[in-house]
Amino acid sequence: MLGAVNTSRLKPCAFLAVSLWLACTGQLGQDVPAEGPPDSGVRPLEDAGTGDAGVPDAGSPDAGTVPITSARVFFSGHSLLDNPMPDHFDDIARSRGKDFNWNQQIVIGSPLRARTWGSGNWQGYRSGKNRVGDSMNVIQELLSPQTLGPGEKYDTLLVTERHDILGPVQWEDTIGQLRHFHDRMVAGNPQSVTYFYHTWLDINKSDPSQWIEYETNARVAWECVSSKVNLTLQAEGRPARVVSLPGSAALVHLVEQVIANEVPGISGSTSQKLNVLFSDNVHLTSLGSYYMASVHHAAVFRQSPEGAQVPSGQNAATVQALQRIAWDFVSAYYAQPGAGERTMEDCRTRVPRDVCPGFWTMLGRPENIEGCQRFFGNATASQDGNPFVWPDPYWQPLPAP
Image (cartoon, rainbow, N blue to C red):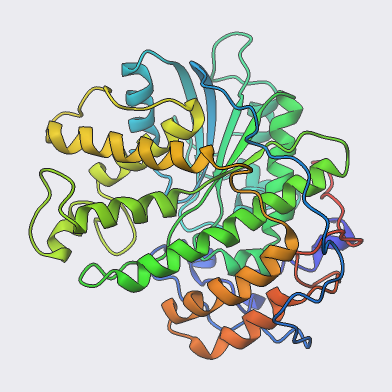
């Protein structure tokens, strides 16, 4: 059994009121929750001033980060992190002279919980497609790598949650699962770092304005998750090494550049331009995946991907522009003091105000906005309540496998 604190959040697919049906069917890109979140019964949209009010969150996982030239990365995600994205990362890193190796765990349509706890007893760590084959024992691979060079350890976990972030946070225990995966990394390499990669909802390629507004605001929710995990680590005297990686905001930045005709080689109507980046309404083309791999390279190595070899068949001027845009965005993001770190008080203000309305409007269920605001605005700690509270007397890490 899981610890009593978190078990209630891990309900089977048939009973997940807000969980997307894709978690059961494996379909991504048709992400519409079956029901809205239930009212929490508490209505403070504003912060109540209790808990962590007035107490700054300590430290920043990005403080003092310097460029590196070597990385061993483990990717865990769904189709918005699927190949060719890691392959492009590999090509960029090697062509820029980096010492790089990697493996992956890809489960299409999955919440993080499906790649950890799974159907029970941490079976999720044996699920998914790997770089070669499938169903690798991820726990053992992270602890004692069999697919890297002799004596090598993974130093970087690049992991994402399902792209409807508010649903998994409430119903799939995103924070507990992310902390658990991070702990598995640290068990294999105490110096390792985890990047929490933000992914995006469906876009209307004819008029992406609503998507741009939502994804710009939604970054807060993803940052609140990594910030809460870091608070739990700091409470144990451990380094806060879970770093926000704003992939969706980086994609917004590119989309805005493309629409403004700032990217050579991409022209036409708005939908024609975005067809160059998106293969449907959510998945990326190979060129779009190359851009996101450039973002990942910039984040992990803290160095520009500019100058990497242009993939065969791609317009050199376009690729070079994507490399530059990726670096400009990532370097500016991490140059901010405390990049990606938020207090739980800020989360209880910003998520209800800035994220809930756009989230449920994007999913076509605006009647669920008020319940979302009540839940994520609630400052009262409880076992099944808003996780964006600190101190959190109900928090405890999930048990080791």
